Length: 173
Image 1 (cartoon, one colour):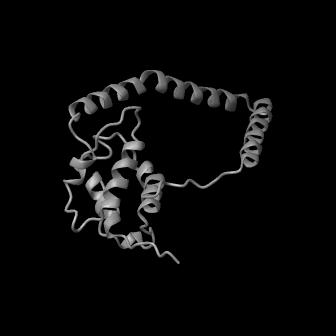
Image 2: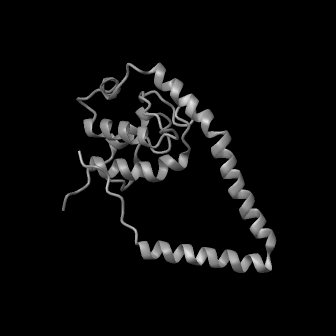
Image 3: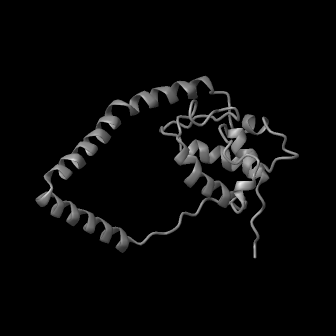
């Protein structure tokens, strides 16, 4: 199965963007010092979250990993009817959901895991990046996804596998 190939970005564009942002912050700080205060508060909030909340998530995922020590991709795949479900979708979904978990621990995934309650993911993770990655890795298209019976209903990992299983294969031409 192919690995995900992220679109390449230009380093020059990134450098230009950073220069524009720093310049804009400098100019704004002269005329509106409160904006700088708001930006610094936002940065402080992010640092606070990283120091205070992230260890709680790591503890949660570490306990989940220990509770599921005997589970693997094989047990995950057995939760599906492999005669009617593309095994590439099963594998890619397992690997990609595991890779976006907000922890450094490799937590075994169950088909019944709820994205928000169990895996602590938000809808933005599912709608954008994750769907694009699974689509590319499995050779499934995201065209006409609104007509998919699982569209807007994917709350568990099983639902996501079923969503991609209902999508058409991408044409190779």
